[in-house]
Image 1 (cartoon, rainbow, N blue to C red):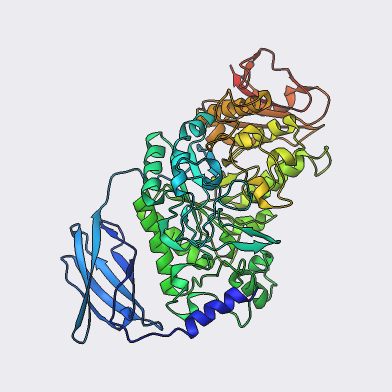
Image 2: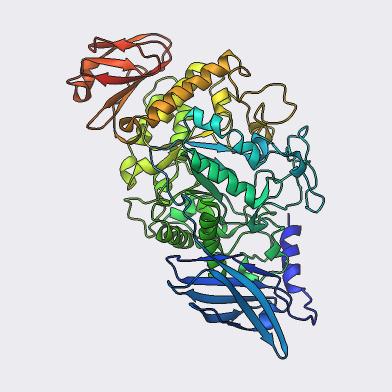
Length: 622
C-alpha cells in the first residue's frame, strides 16, 4: 500500500537535474483558440531546465503578463492575455538563457461552428457505456508494446477487451432507436497505467479513471481523431455528448507525476493515507477537522494519487483542460467522477468557468450518499449550508437506492413504493430537482435485473418509474436486453461485453433477430416508453404530483397545460380496481385514457383496472 506513495516522494525529492541544455518538450494546453470569452491563458511549459529560461512572446494581440518559476526547474508557467481582436495563427514561445535561445511554436486556432456546450435537460435520456466493453471495430488498436499494460484478452474479465470508439460509432443507430438522446461513456482519456494486483488478480485500467495524459484520448480506443469523428456523428444524429471528468485524482503513471512541478501538486501525507470514503464529515457541523481532511485529501486508492486543487497551478491546469476538451471535442455536458472528494471551492470555480464560456453547460457529479440533505449539498440547494454549490445537477443516488429497495419490498409504512414517494417528497431542498440525473444501475453497482431477482414485472415497474418521474434518466448499457450479474466476486461481472459488439460473438443483441423473446420484450418496452417520453413534454418536463401509496398502489401524474399523463403501479400479486375519485384534482375534465404501452383506450375513468405487479402509463383524454 505504501510503495506507490513513497515512489512519488522519491521521484520528486531525489530527482537529479543534470546540467542539460534547456529544452521545451511539452506545452499544455496543446493549443488554444482566439475569440474565447476569457482572455486569460496559462501555459504549462515543460522540459529539461525549462524553468531557467527567460521567456518572451511577440505576437499581435498576445501579451505575456507573467512567467512563474516553481520548485522544479523543469517547469515554467506562462500567464498570457489574448485580446479579442487577435487573429488565429502560430506564435513563437521564445526562451533565453545566456547565449542560448529556445523556440517553441504554439497554435492559436479559429473556433469552429460545431455544436458544443448544449447542455442537458429533463427532456434528455442518457445512455451510459464502457467503450472497452461495448464494441470493438479495429483489432489493430487493441494493444501496444509501448504502453505500460500490453495485454488485451477477452477471455479474462479483468483485462482490456478491445472495445473502441469506432465500435461505439457503429452502433449509434441502436442507441438512438432505444430512445436515448445523449451518450455518456466512461472516460476515454489515456490510461497508460500498469496492471494492479487486486484480490490476487491482475487488473487493467479498462474503466478509464486513471488519467495519464489529460490531452490525449487513449490510442487503444482510437485516439483524438476517432473521438472527434464519433462526436460529430452523435451531433449529426441529433444527440448530445457527455464526457466523464476526473478532477480528484490521476493515474500513478501520469506524465507530470514522474517529475512533479512542486511537492504540493498532490495531497502529501507523512505516511500513506487513504480517504475514509465517509461523506458525513463534510457537512456535519460537529465533525473534527482531521476527519474532514481525511475524507477530502486522503487518496482514493494507492494507485490514484490525489491532486491538490487548492494549488492555483493545479486548479488552473484542470479548469483549462475542461474548457479545452469542450472546444476540441465538441462536448455538451460533464459527468464528474468522485465529486464529493474534490475541493468544493475549486469545483465551483471550474463549473463557473465552463458556464462562462458555454452558458448552457450542464454538470452532474457522483456523490454517493444515502440521504437527501447530503446529496443537496453538492448541487444548487435551498439549505443554509456555509458553502453553496453551483453545480447544475447531480447523480441521484438517494432515489436510486429507494427504487431498488422499494421494488423488492412488500408494502409497509415506509416500504415498497413509499420509499420512492418519500424521497421525492423531499425535493424542496433542491433549487431544481428536475436537473438531477436518475438511474437504476451503473458501472459500479449490481445489475438492476439481478437486483430485482430477474423478475420481469419488477423490471418493467422500475423502468417505468425511472422514465416517468422527475429528473434526467440514464440507462446503463445492456439494461435494455436484461444483462445481469452482481459485483461479487468482482466489478467485471457487471461490466461484461455487449453481445454482438465484437468479432466472433455467437450472438448479436444489437439486432431483433439476435435477441430472444424476453430480451426483445424488454428492449421494446424501454424503446416504446423512452420514445414516448422524448415526444411528450408533459412527461419529461411537466409538473409532478404524487399521491401517498395505498394498498400496494402508487399513483402520480406528470402534466402541463397541454397534456396529463397518469402513472399507476400495483406491487401486489392481485389485480386492483383503482377508484379514480381520489385523483379528481388531476383527472377532472378527462373522460378517457390511452394506454401508452399498448395503445388500448380506457373509456370509463371511474375505475381503472390495475393488473397484478403492473405499471400503467395512461395519457388522459377529454
